[in-house]
Image (cartoon, rainbow, N blue to C red; front, side, top):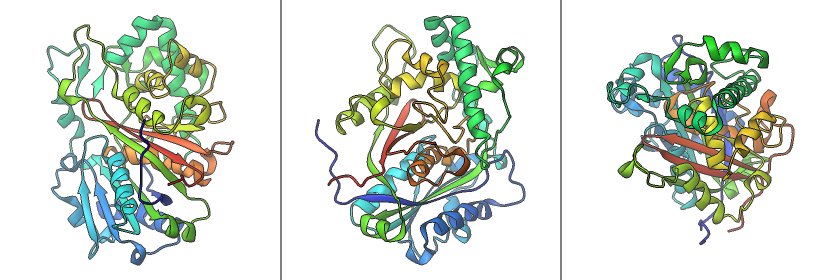
Length: 397
């Protein structure tokens, strides 16, 4: 397959994140964004004078504010600089990364700051998303963003007992990772011996999907600074280099009925990305992954899709602890989406956290082994997938 060609390399040299919480009532939107801007600039050793362009994104109508980037200039520092505003649903944060990479790789800018945020307490997110589904016909399968379809499919394939145990095991691993991340929203202190009790007593949402399985809504901001290779080497001892990224959408033929073979956008994107980067064994050639996992059922199922696995290999990865932070293939050392979900930033956090693992700046949730190659996923809409591949060494052009 034809390799991705870039004019020049782009490195991630600064990452900033606010504290994620259900309610950040002590700050307004620009103030919350400013927290992450300052942290990213400090890590990159830069000031706003070094930033050529600001790319800004969120699910703007969730807060009921049109063109919020105009108000946010007092927190972003974007006044007087070239700016772009991007919204692509739940994938917004990952699309911001793709756009920032393209702006630098093209030579249009030397340094770009990308900002993803959400302050969901100020709108009615659940009310908006819930209107996506018919309350009668899909009542056992889906209610907006809350879908029990994947749980049903996993149970049908692997049996109720094994599937439920694996899903809860995945959720507890994610919480144990979140407990190491002081920025994470949901840090519940779950233990493995609680699995059976949680599975029975957590409030039911739809089908086999329970409250404990599902992500919440969070307030928070993620900021990333992208630089040309010359600037990156000047300002950062160990940049995280963007090797490649891919976006795949399938909304025009989205269906859950019929017997036609359906290839998930996750597997399709992974297959194309891996082929053009000579990755034949992702579990060995990639060191860790930050996955957009809206629920533990989806996270469990999507391991198979992203890593191109067959049979029950993904279930065994969870059962054998391979996904743990110190396991053979760590997944979401940050705690993932079930720990923090500021929707407009959520997909960016996946790339940011993967970059931090390569840069060695993840702190208490740093993977103990050296991370040379990392994969990050974004998800949204009706099965939209964005995959980003990061490396420790600058790619050959």
